[in-house]
Length: 127
Image 1 (cartoon, helix red, strand yellow):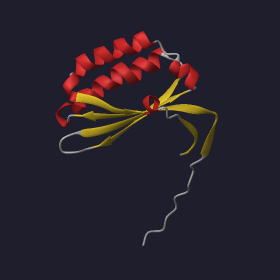
Image 2: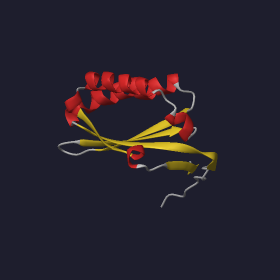
Image 3: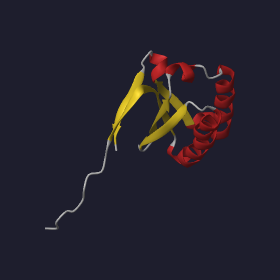
Image 4: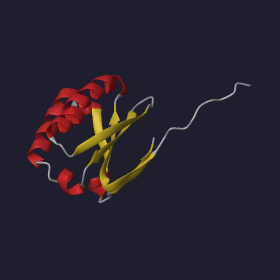
């Protein structure tokens, strides 16, 4: 048996004020996933990060299936007010350009927490 000399250096970070959390779930055709991922990063991740200083960060999670990949996107905003102040016309233009770039038949938004009146807040993380 090997002796372990590892030391836990993780710390608890608490967010005060808490971060607003946007949760999105997409279904993406497996054959279009790599293209979707690259376009999503350029148009949405960098597009929002470069444009909105209140964009804090983003995580992307993948569940591979034979017929469809389910992709969960978690976006952190400084506040709900800042996030919801994004110009809807900009969002509409981005969404249209995104659908054209990846092919509307290759991706489908199946869940968005704000469309269901659900609001989550990131209050802490341990890393």
